[in-house]
Length: 207
Image 1: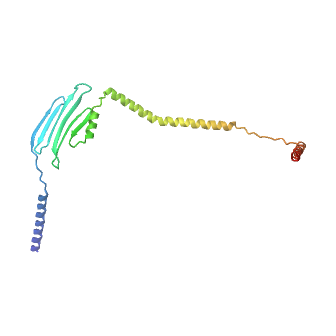
Image 2: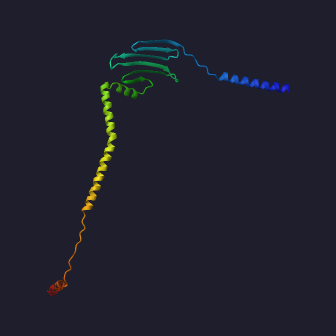
């Protein structure tokens, strides 16, 4: 009995050791990327700047500047760039701007069509707050008119149908039955006429 217990304990210990060894061999070790440089600066007006560079050739920098401070056109204009090495060993670098007129990226992984569209959108004239409210109001008016149009059309159609029905009823009420009575022709008048026709036919034959 004691020998059996010792054997079971040995088997359990071996299984436990094997499982622990398996866990240690599958644990992934990740390389720690050293931070070579880091800068940051924040201003009370909202302007900022930051930059960092890693030992794996990664890099990013960004700055934001408040324009037209204290006015209705106040906006934070941001510009920056980033760089890294992809899985294939290629250097990826992107530059961008962001502000009131949108986000415009330019880089090795950004399709040219997207960059062109973003630049075109950014070059559009700026819309003031009053113009925006006016456009919004006109848009709401158009939506309300579009929503009311089907109802008005239904009302017009219903009126036309009612008018048509009333015309039909009026026409039916104006129909007057007419009875035509033909007076019978006396036999005395018919007989001479028939004889005269026969006489004419005989004369034409003999002629």
